[in-house]
Length: 312
Image (cartoon, rainbow, N blue to C red; front, top):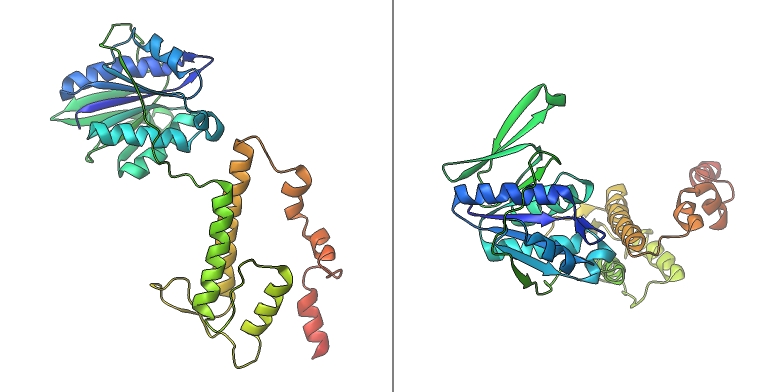
């Protein structure tokens, strides 16, 4: 790695001090690696922050005042950082060891296939590689981690370095909006429906797949698919390339896990964009006794099994 990229956290049109500390250290590291220093500043007020960064030893300041950064917080920032890192080539990316810095850094590392280390208090270049020093076990042990990947992400503990003003070239460049990899809520629900339809199409090709699933029709389809008729499904196919499973609890567990995963995404995104679910909805999904009564099973959990044994 040669280049050093600094993720600039800011608030109220002012960079956080840890970002300036990282920018100062980045100049030293880039000199040892033979590369340059890049800063990435995003969201509302980024232009004002970029002007302040000119007083620090940064070669290029990448700027984007994209409202989606403030609306979605994490993923759009990862999109921009990923674009800068791939354009710069093998790089060390410095993020602050803060809640946002850790989230951004870990997701960026996953996308780049990069090594990642946290709570770093010092950095040192050796033979073209970067060593990260961090305390563990409350400071009882000091560890040194060396990046072996082309990219590395280091989350820096605040107050580890001094922020020293020393002008760099300070060239400011506007970032083009990257394609983005975050699915909006409508796309998640569309995906959930499409996957349901795919499971039906692959597992029960003799069944009709409706354009829109309705509660009444779902009940009919389940009765037809799992009943004792000649059309009973015997194998569950998740994808065309996946091995088949016997129909049973495993199939339903897989389906429920998939639904729960994406419903969690929807709840999180709704909250981030300022439309959190009402309390009676968010909390109501856990009131199973009430839901059980509303769906026609007043006897509560276990009533299906009790009724079955009573009939025997």
